[in-house]
Image (tube, rainbow over all chains, first blue to last red):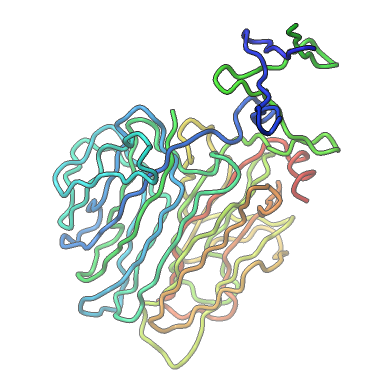
Length: 202
Length: 214
């Protein structure tokens, strides 16, 4: 009988007693793991602007913990309930860093499984009148979305950063955040609601 | 007796991970090509097409590699809408083309490529837009990927093209010398817009990607 031993440590290979299957973990040829273990979270988005100027920040979530956050999905629904105009209200989505926005209403990340540890994204907030973003450094927007300022144009948008492994996901490293801001002047009555789903691991 | 497994070529021993006690393995096809490819990085960029030049065959947005990397498009995600004076029932056509060789674009404004993870290297993809139209270098030689009809009424819609799965073959490949472009076909009505983003991966070994995907 021979036992297979690691070349890196003293560890020996495990054969599971019920299935009699040898345990293997998939790695790419560069040594990165194909399917790491995650915990997963989500939070709602509610953007109903009352401050209507371009560059107003309505929603932010910042990763202030010790894990990396991998954005899996941003699911949005846009609508308009104001006085119609021949124009559009455009929002932008981008990462930020350096400082944490203040004011507004705080939200807490929801665990998809209550056995998970608390999320590393510990600061989530929104404000119809705009958050205070002193010293916040914004990256360039990576996505634009919005609505024509009319009453019959409600629509949804479903951005999925999923697929084969984590390289396709949008990453919030420690101290980075994600935000939704006005890209143009917003017309009163335009709104954007939905949720963000993400995974975390160290 | 504990034995260590070594490969038949070098002097490399297999690793057993200390927590799971699982052996590390990598998947390969029978042709020797790895099934889980090593990418240079993943990227995303926004676009906002609001035409001011309304004539047919105006290119508003282009996307293509500048170096030797091969691009694998994961997703196009955008909304279409209309903010102009509503005319009699009509449509505007802005189509998405895949051009294959002898064609490139100049002028307009460069769009910043955002790394999906800031630890990744910079993208080498050229992305540019112009409401008044980009300049086409070379002849128009392309195939239509998407016929984008936009009704010139107040009817916003969403379009989501996902070329992803658990395997790489689902992705749309853009090799060196190739690219994508949004182009008008017929006269566009003022007020039409297309806004959204494109997500893609970049691979340094195009021959390897081609062996897996094509």
